[in-house]
Image (cartoon, rainbow, N blue to C red; front, side, top):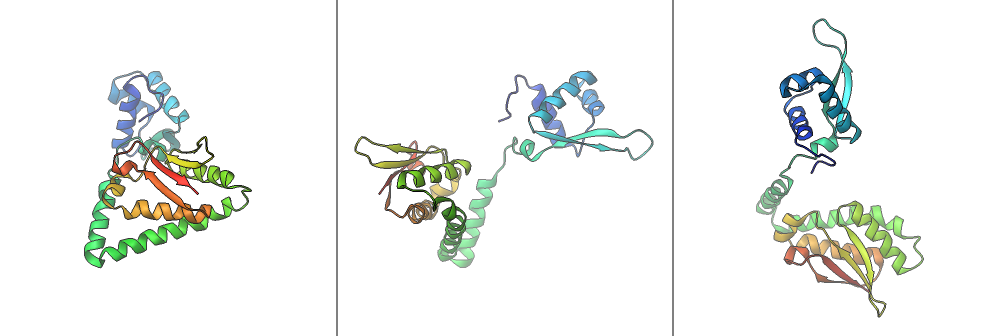
Length: 209
């Protein structure tokens, strides 16, 4: 979860920064019972990894300005989040209040937004294979671990090794259906799903054309 950490000390530093609004080197050294140079080394490593940020602040009372360290957005991401359950709860309330049609409208709006953003990027591709490669890059950036495969007969496949929305996709198949329609619109050819992570497969595999 936290890159390049060989011991638990840096994890403890991150946990302390998570618990506090901001900490100095001296604060951390005292709380963790380590030397100031050791605390500074851990903080430098974490800042270099982009997990924390620092700012120079003046104490409320007397004293010289000090460097105060806090978690960065990347550092916050190192701690577990329960976004999936929140999303599922919101979908459940949405369907209860406005019916299943409301969820379909949201899926349609999401599809239109992605199509508007991605379609111009694929327009200059000279071939279907080039267009598919660009789509795989965009999906990988979105967390799908997508790649293009070509069988011996020349048939193209799009494979996704990860589903970043798996918990939602398992209970709301509309999400998978909306994504399949999006791929068809972007590529301009028929897209057939052959395997599906949310149904127990190791990847989502689409036959293109």
